[in-house]
Amino acid sequence: MSDNKIIKIYLYTKFERFWHWLQAAMIIILLITGIEIHGAFTLLGYETAVEVHNFIGLSWLILFAFFVFWLFTTGEWRQYIPTTKKLFSVIVYYSVGIFQGKPHPVQKSPGAKHNPLQRLTYLALSAMLLPIQMTTGVLYYTWNLWGGAAIPLLSAMPLLFVAILHTLVAFMLLSFLIVHVYMTTTGHSLFSHISGMITGWEEIYETTKVQEWELPARHK
Image (cartoon, rainbow, N blue to C red; front, top):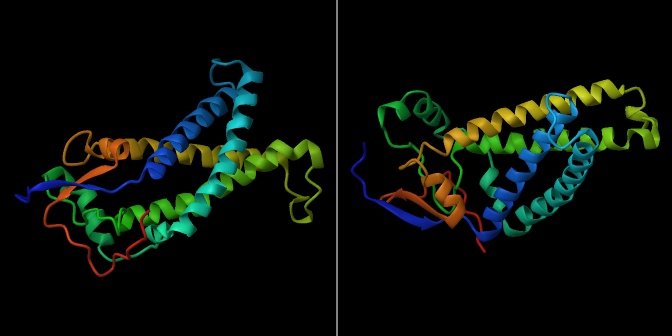
């Protein structure tokens, strides 16, 4: 274990923390109501579950558009630029080093809040999985309005395919959520990462320096 002194830096803005917890709540509600709609259990009742699922889903779609706007107007989109530098080191750390008490090979900084593996994961999540989930959700929600024929490219797409794809991505998001929660326990202390997303202050080593590959983002 490194002997470097651990300090705290202000890393997450109020908006980032608000959006993080709001999105987490929406995803959890969507997962619970979605699973209930599939008949796995009864909590709210089928009709109520459908209404809640549709309302939260449409709200998420609208709010996500505002989040994307925020990313590009603040320059925070740079935080998601993928890189392979130190990617292998991070993979080795999570595979072996973390169980040996070794320090993380890439410490967080205001210019690089995500390590290379996180960048790839969050980019895939935000640019691929979420758009697919939202698109299939809207298609399923509006299917009876246009019968799948309003868009020529989708006219031959069966409703079952849309439903299966929507459900498949939902389980992928559930898997991500489980792994994400686990990873929050791997900081300098058990709840250090969770605390950082609540207060905005993150623990890093005092000697942490921004490296050349870390593109700084503009902060508000």
